[in-house]
Image (cartoon, rainbow, N blue to C red; front, side, top):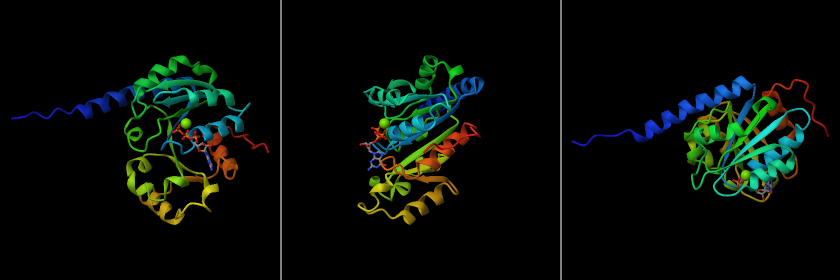
Length: 224
Ligand SMILES: Nc1nc2c(ncn2[C@@H]2O[C@H](COP(=O)(O)OP(=O)(O)OP(=O)(O)O)[C@@H](O)[C@H]2O)c(=O)[nH]1
Ligand SMILES: [Mg+2]
């Protein structure tokens, strides 16, 4: 008789254990952390750039950037004014807790209020791997199409906030917002959602205010 070896379950439970240790380190240092997930090109790095600029001087921000091969995104975050650490996954389609555990010692956590992790662009794998971050944010975007909640339910189910980026493209691309939102509501009822455009800046103010609220910056005022 063949024995079933639960390899996947063991890998995920080892990952979750390490994720708990990552969280402990962040909590002990008073760092609040967000895990940004999205398909390739949805606008993760563009949003991070807006946050860095919007919270400059109010929040000490660091970014861990996951990328299969390059340091393009970490360079962009650094150019925008954040401390940034690059993780090259060498082909893996997601970050995991081991990679975050390796990156954390490269940051002086005592000097950071907010850590944003930009996951690898992918709507499947990242949702299976806990990192130890406090909340997960999904960035959807108009050109991906309005059927994505239906096709990638695990991703939409497992997040605490949703950004709908590239609303400037709504006049040009067929996208039924009602259909999209109905799909999200079934999977994740009441999910806080921010339709916005990194291109025009529409909706960015509310989004940055939400991020600031998460880091407990009660005196936060958006500067025009
Ligand atoms: N029209 C429009 N384009 C946008 C918007 N936000 C980002 N882009 C463009 O979309 C492309 C991808 O943006 P990124 O921020 O690099 O996306 P990403 O999710 O970080 O991409 P990967 O890290 O490669 O997965 C860039 O060419 C951006 O200029 C937007 O709101 N509207
Ligand atoms: Mg990016």
